[in-house]
Length: 200
Image (cartoon, rainbow, N blue to C red; front, side, top):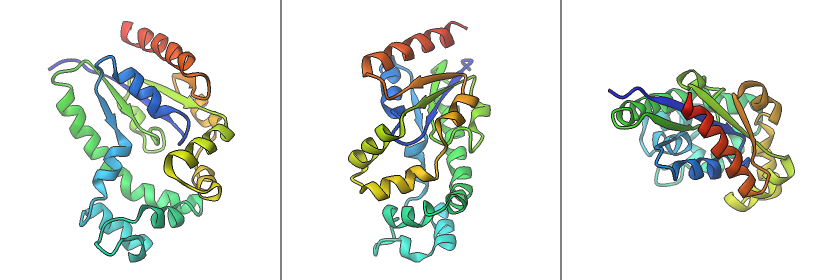
Protein backbone atom coordinates (compact mmCIF):
# COMPACT_ATOMS: atom_id res chain seq x y z
CA UNK A 1 0.00 0.00 0.00
CA UNK A 2 1.27 3.50 -0.87
CA UNK A 3 2.28 5.72 2.05
CA UNK A 4 -0.23 8.58 1.91
CA UNK A 5 0.01 12.22 2.96
CA UNK A 6 -3.34 13.84 3.80
CA UNK A 7 -3.62 17.62 3.52
CA UNK A 8 -6.58 19.22 5.27
CA UNK A 9 -8.06 22.40 3.81
CA UNK A 10 -10.53 24.34 5.91
CA UNK A 11 -12.13 27.75 6.37
CA UNK A 12 -15.44 29.43 7.02
CA UNK A 13 -18.16 29.51 4.37
CA UNK A 14 -17.44 32.03 1.63
CA UNK A 15 -13.71 32.16 2.37
CA UNK A 16 -12.68 30.74 -1.01
CA UNK A 17 -11.76 27.30 0.30
CA UNK A 18 -13.51 25.35 -2.47
CA UNK A 19 -11.92 27.52 -5.18
CA UNK A 20 -8.51 26.82 -3.69
CA UNK A 21 -9.21 23.10 -3.47
CA UNK A 22 -10.26 22.96 -7.14
CA UNK A 23 -7.03 24.67 -8.16
CA UNK A 24 -4.86 22.20 -6.24
CA UNK A 25 -6.93 19.24 -7.50
CA UNK A 26 -6.08 20.21 -11.10
CA UNK A 27 -2.61 18.85 -10.40
CA UNK A 28 -4.12 15.36 -10.22
CA UNK A 29 -4.53 15.21 -6.45
CA UNK A 30 -7.79 13.51 -5.38
CA UNK A 31 -10.18 15.39 -3.11
CA UNK A 32 -12.41 14.15 -0.33
CA UNK A 33 -15.18 16.76 -0.08
CA UNK A 34 -16.71 16.74 3.40
CA UNK A 35 -19.54 19.03 2.25
CA UNK A 36 -20.47 16.50 -0.42
CA UNK A 37 -20.32 13.70 2.13
CA UNK A 38 -22.56 15.76 4.43
CA UNK A 39 -25.19 15.78 1.68
CA UNK A 40 -24.78 12.07 1.09
CA UNK A 41 -25.29 11.03 4.72
CA UNK A 42 -28.60 12.93 5.02
CA UNK A 43 -30.32 11.28 2.07
CA UNK A 44 -33.95 10.27 2.41
CA UNK A 45 -34.59 7.53 5.00
CA UNK A 46 -30.93 7.51 6.14
CA UNK A 47 -30.18 6.90 9.82
CA UNK A 48 -28.51 10.28 9.95
CA UNK A 49 -31.56 12.11 8.63
CA UNK A 50 -33.83 10.23 11.00
CA UNK A 51 -31.62 11.31 13.89
CA UNK A 52 -31.79 14.95 12.76
CA UNK A 53 -35.58 14.81 12.51
CA UNK A 54 -35.75 13.38 16.04
CA UNK A 55 -33.99 16.49 17.33
CA UNK A 56 -35.25 19.27 15.06
CA UNK A 57 -38.73 18.02 14.11
CA UNK A 58 -40.50 16.72 11.01
CA UNK A 59 -41.01 20.20 9.59
CA UNK A 60 -37.42 20.14 8.29
CA UNK A 61 -38.58 17.62 5.67
CA UNK A 62 -40.20 18.17 2.30
CA UNK A 63 -43.46 16.34 1.61
CA UNK A 64 -41.53 13.58 -0.16
CA UNK A 65 -39.40 12.92 2.95
CA UNK A 66 -36.21 14.56 1.69
CA UNK A 67 -34.38 17.18 3.73
CA UNK A 68 -35.52 20.80 3.43
CA UNK A 69 -32.12 22.43 3.86
CA UNK A 70 -33.42 25.95 4.30
CA UNK A 71 -35.87 24.85 6.99
CA UNK A 72 -33.09 23.03 8.82
CA UNK A 73 -30.76 26.01 8.43
CA UNK A 74 -33.31 28.34 10.05
CA UNK A 75 -33.36 26.10 13.11
CA UNK A 76 -29.78 24.87 13.23
CA UNK A 77 -28.18 28.27 12.66
CA UNK A 78 -30.46 30.17 15.04
CA UNK A 79 -27.91 29.76 17.85
CA UNK A 80 -24.50 28.18 18.32
CA UNK A 81 -25.99 25.57 20.65
CA UNK A 82 -28.38 24.44 17.91
CA UNK A 83 -25.54 24.25 15.39
CA UNK A 84 -23.57 22.11 17.81
CA UNK A 85 -26.54 19.76 18.15
CA UNK A 86 -26.65 19.29 14.39
CA UNK A 87 -22.90 18.81 14.15
CA UNK A 88 -22.89 16.20 16.91
CA UNK A 89 -25.35 14.14 14.85
CA UNK A 90 -23.80 14.56 11.42
CA UNK A 91 -20.06 14.51 12.18
CA UNK A 92 -19.71 10.81 13.07
CA UNK A 93 -21.34 9.84 9.77
CA UNK A 94 -19.07 12.20 7.80
CA UNK A 95 -15.96 10.89 9.57
CA UNK A 96 -16.95 7.30 8.82
CA UNK A 97 -17.42 8.08 5.10
CA UNK A 98 -14.14 10.03 5.05
CA UNK A 99 -12.22 7.06 6.42
CA UNK A 100 -13.80 4.82 3.79
CA UNK A 101 -12.69 7.17 1.00
CA UNK A 102 -9.17 7.46 2.41
CA UNK A 103 -8.91 3.68 2.46
CA UNK A 104 -9.85 3.50 -1.23
CA UNK A 105 -7.71 6.42 -2.44
CA UNK A 106 -4.53 5.48 -0.55
CA UNK A 107 -4.19 2.39 -2.74
CA UNK A 108 -3.35 4.56 -5.77
CA UNK A 109 -2.34 8.01 -4.45
CA UNK A 110 0.35 9.33 -2.12
CA UNK A 111 -1.33 12.72 -1.55
CA UNK A 112 -5.01 13.31 -0.71
CA UNK A 113 -6.82 16.60 -0.10
CA UNK A 114 -9.43 16.64 2.64
CA UNK A 115 -11.72 19.64 2.06
CA UNK A 116 -13.55 20.04 5.36
CA UNK A 117 -15.14 23.28 6.63
CA UNK A 118 -15.25 21.81 10.16
CA UNK A 119 -11.89 20.09 10.05
CA UNK A 120 -10.85 21.19 13.53
CA UNK A 121 -14.30 21.19 15.11
CA UNK A 122 -14.84 17.50 14.38
CA UNK A 123 -11.15 16.66 15.03
CA UNK A 124 -10.46 15.37 11.53
CA UNK A 125 -7.21 17.33 11.63
CA UNK A 126 -5.72 14.31 13.45
CA UNK A 127 -5.91 12.50 10.10
CA UNK A 128 -3.85 15.21 8.40
CA UNK A 129 -0.11 15.64 8.00
CA UNK A 130 -0.59 19.35 7.22
CA UNK A 131 -3.49 21.79 7.37
CA UNK A 132 -4.25 24.88 5.29
CA UNK A 133 -6.65 27.47 6.67
CA UNK A 134 -8.36 29.83 4.24
CA UNK A 135 -9.40 33.17 5.75
CA UNK A 136 -11.31 36.11 4.28
CA UNK A 137 -12.83 39.45 5.21
CA UNK A 138 -16.40 39.13 6.49
CA UNK A 139 -17.85 41.63 4.01
CA UNK A 140 -16.41 39.67 1.09
CA UNK A 141 -17.69 36.40 2.51
CA UNK A 142 -21.19 37.86 2.96
CA UNK A 143 -21.43 38.87 -0.70
CA UNK A 144 -20.14 35.50 -1.87
CA UNK A 145 -22.55 33.51 0.28
CA UNK A 146 -25.57 35.57 -0.81
CA UNK A 147 -24.70 35.10 -4.47
CA UNK A 148 -23.65 31.44 -4.25
CA UNK A 149 -26.59 30.16 -2.19
CA UNK A 150 -29.22 32.69 -3.33
CA UNK A 151 -29.73 33.93 0.25
CA UNK A 152 -30.93 37.18 1.70
CA UNK A 153 -28.46 39.23 3.71
CA UNK A 154 -30.14 38.14 6.96
CA UNK A 155 -30.00 34.44 5.98
CA UNK A 156 -26.33 34.72 5.07
CA UNK A 157 -25.49 36.55 8.31
CA UNK A 158 -27.30 33.83 10.26
CA UNK A 159 -24.98 31.21 8.80
CA UNK A 160 -21.90 33.33 9.35
CA UNK A 161 -22.90 34.11 12.92
CA UNK A 162 -22.40 30.56 14.16
CA UNK A 163 -19.01 30.13 12.49
CA UNK A 164 -15.53 30.84 13.78
CA UNK A 165 -13.58 34.00 13.00
CA UNK A 166 -10.27 34.17 11.14
CA UNK A 167 -8.21 33.87 14.32
CA UNK A 168 -9.60 30.38 14.92
CA UNK A 169 -7.97 29.16 11.69
CA UNK A 170 -4.82 31.25 12.11
CA UNK A 171 -4.16 29.70 15.53
CA UNK A 172 -4.70 26.11 14.41
CA UNK A 173 -3.57 25.78 10.79
CA UNK A 174 -0.06 24.96 9.62
CA UNK A 175 -0.46 27.33 6.68
CA UNK A 176 -2.79 30.30 6.05
CA UNK A 177 -4.03 31.71 2.74
CA UNK A 178 -6.10 34.88 2.37
CA UNK A 179 -8.95 33.81 0.08
CA UNK A 180 -10.03 37.43 -0.37
CA UNK A 181 -7.01 38.30 -2.50
CA UNK A 182 -6.91 38.21 -6.30
CA UNK A 183 -7.15 34.67 -7.65
CA UNK A 184 -3.67 34.75 -9.18
CA UNK A 185 -2.22 35.63 -5.76
CA UNK A 186 -4.23 32.90 -4.03
CA UNK A 187 -3.04 30.34 -6.56
CA UNK A 188 0.57 31.54 -6.28
CA UNK A 189 0.61 31.12 -2.49
CA UNK A 190 -1.18 27.77 -2.74
CA UNK A 191 1.37 26.42 -5.23
CA UNK A 192 4.19 27.50 -2.93
CA UNK A 193 2.62 25.81 0.08
CA UNK A 194 1.94 22.58 -1.82
CA UNK A 195 5.55 22.54 -3.02
CA UNK A 196 6.77 22.82 0.58
CA UNK A 197 4.42 20.11 1.80
CA UNK A 198 5.12 17.58 -0.94
CA UNK A 199 8.90 18.06 -0.72
CA UNK A 200 8.97 17.03 2.95
